[in-house]
Image (cartoon, rainbow, N blue to C red; front, side, top):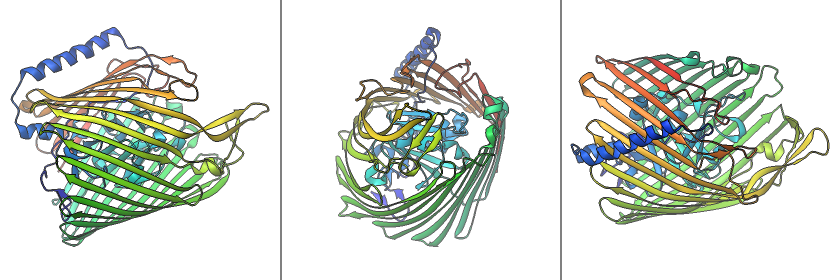
Length: 638
């Protein structure tokens, strides 16, 4: 049961510290050496041997390390613990981010199973896009405290615009989520939850330097005064990238989370956001400005009402002014949840979303509006928990879409839990495909198609979670996505420039298995082994989808050294073969990373991280993997 007054889960209030998720992400090329493969195998065998041989661990430590007590909201829009959430989900905590020494959200997500992070820099300035269960990055909905954010090439969000310095936790929901979130959630949802003000004043500063002339400066402060509190975060980041001439960039990120308690049952928060990225190549600039306001009221212990209004603006321009465009996104969302008869948690909601774009480079301007209604019932008939939800989205151009989802959790024993779900999802066509006509893209003249239909999918998941002992937890799940009406293109090369026409043609599917083994092989040592098998097919050609790795194996080891107040984090990732856009087979590769943290006294910490220890490079579809990278620095916190 959840307490709607406090927003906490009554039975398990301690969110604990997340056990490090053991899955990095797939991108591909190269050729894994037998030496590296044997090393991964030896570490794995050692892990299993350690699991069997050591027993100094309390139940409380296991719950904390396995992260089962961590609260997650995104999966159902109501509070659950991760161990009791009915759908497939993961949570990355701020403690995990600090231990791993990662500075960007895309790096944080690499250790989540079933996820692929594309970190290519390239001339577009994009540095982090996420794929879930083999679906493209455009099929993952990215939220910041529930607000839809924009900004990135090819209709996908660039995650480097979010600094880990402002992150409290990252909630990942895998599989179709349109029953709650509408368009773009075919693959899943990533909701980045930001930090809030602490009761006591806090101030921290971090300065780090590394290879590629990388510099990262972070300043964070928080305070509370009576009923008002505020957390502020500023990050400056710059780097030469792989090739200074093409990749050099500078960016600044600012965020604030202001909250005022109107009464013990009611509060309001205001969250402004700003980021600016400037690239040397072509004088490209990207600017993002957001404002997210949330009003929450818990009229009694059984219900909660939330009203959210937000605005987000994204601008992209080059020095020659020929490709300027800007997009505005407006959202209003009203959610109401109530516990009924101590068995049903009913959630009702309405959302209004309007998007406007003015693109002088195409050139065109357009807008779209969507009105959405959703309802969800969480029925707790322990040991069974059922979740049934449905959402209807009415769009001013392509009509009405209705998307249901059904999930079930069966707590067979204290140690065994079974989960299954089926849901429908969709993604509406982008404005550029609907309205931008006769614009050049390389050798092509691109033509709009106002008759495009939304992409649609049915997603299925089934899995189990079993706790072998206080030291070992295993998760195994199967997934499949059937996708219809995929938006693709047809080219005509009868004259120059060649013609490119958008159309709904392809049917495809992605399916596979993900496995995680979390354990405490030794005292002060946590370990996570992750494996994802992915099978994809373009059903019109019978071929695999391009750039989708069929195997991904990760191992993450975190060791605390109390005697010297330090910790070490070791990660390794093997990515299997996949096919390029020319359908050339690309070989697998292995990457090793290491992070070190050492506390100095009460207020300071030195840290260092080494990525790609053995200097892997020349991977065709991983431009940003180009030799060993170093980053180290000092953090001071009061």
